[in-house]
Image (cartoon, rainbow, N blue to C red; front, side):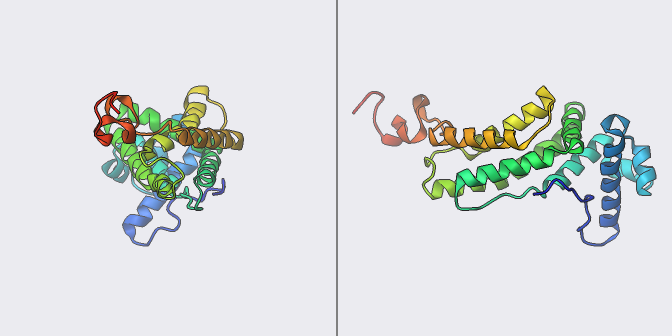
Length: 224
């Protein structure tokens, strides 16, 4: 992935609805670049896009709804690698995430979306749906690694990918410092090492890894 982002919707199919969506999301993207989230208003988006403000309110309801859809649109371009090696895939995905959020406008966007989700139930629902869909796609990467024998069979794919994404969230939202390739490399290295050590194995009965729990092995606790 490259850090040179195209205006959202550029390759969307034709039709009035698609053209309206493209014009609006492009306007939001440009307004964020010029004035940040604090200066973003429905009126400014309407003026820049040429779409009547009533249409914006009818379809998206709020600025929060707009920025959430913009995030979903832009993030759909982050590729999910399939190299045949999980450590390689983790590093590739981490670098793509770093490239995406390394641009100031992108980190401002995720800040805006998280802030919006805290205030607006619609924005919160959009954000949950977006991350659920992306997580469902990304878990295939870990499941393929399990099938190849790279990780224990009871590895939790969501645990692996959540751990990979956590350092980026911390850097952007808590530390409020730039995201870079060094962060990507350290995050991927740490997650791979932890996954190999069994840190993300699902827990079964008695807190043991699932394939070692008494229920799986049909043995009483402490039995032989």
